[in-house]
Length: 335
Image 1 (cartoon, helix red, strand yellow):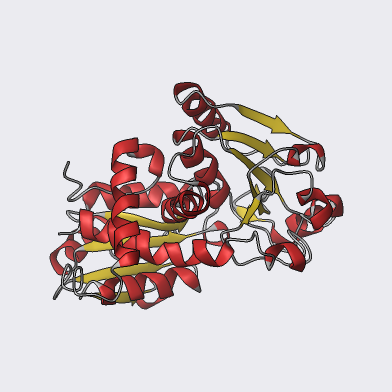
Image 2 (cartoon, rainbow, N blue to C red; image 1 turned 30 degrees about the vertical axis):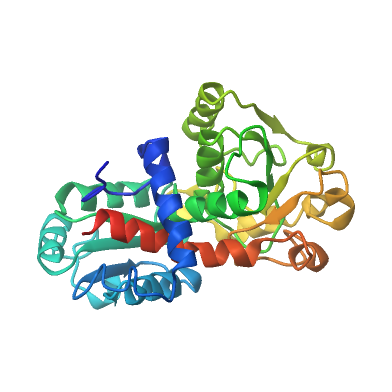
């Protein structure tokens, strides 16, 4: 199959076979990382990284990915570009995307919670760039989805649990925290895990529901893959017999009001649920579960240090996997 020119805004848009192709190439790229096998895949090519929000791992991993493929990743920020907004004149998305397409082999865009005025606005922006660009557009995390993280998560689970993830049990659990985080990583996680036949338990305090459309898609994925999906509001019993615990804070559906992101109120609300921390006692209820997290980890809130740094934690493996899956995405879509 050919993935050349294909956008990646959400893994749900790709077939399971296409996702497996990315994962298998990423696994081989990890093995051959410092050989010459893939060192000229993007030779003399540039990948644009368009950051509305800053990052640590995302910028580092994409820059390393482009370099290790023989190309170059160029950092862009909206404040350094004359772009049209609701409040200022400037270049339209159509014009920017078409010009970028003449320069680069791909465009990555990162736009999260505090750079949008309502849930879904970031996704709409990526769709607009994908509409007009003649080169692949890749989400580097936006307000709805984080496909590169989802692929890195699955790559980590395949390494530690085996490539057949069917009937393995994932607990996607809300963690109380001092950060107001978007739904992107957790929504991507339940979507892609259910595609691979995992039984998914989504656990959170009442009032922290995710996107209903994503929940329905996850249920359908589970049905098609002969998996199970359930929602729990019990911060203890949800750990029973699970194989992977993925603890991550996410904001409530009330985070946006009148075009404003209510970050302080979201943090104040989240800190009222200390019982939702992932700790050793809760992990003992599991099936000797792996602990996973997309990072940065809010230690002491989402999870205790002894779990995050314990011998069942795969957080650093998953962080490394971002590099490999992004190399695979670039190699298969941009040449």
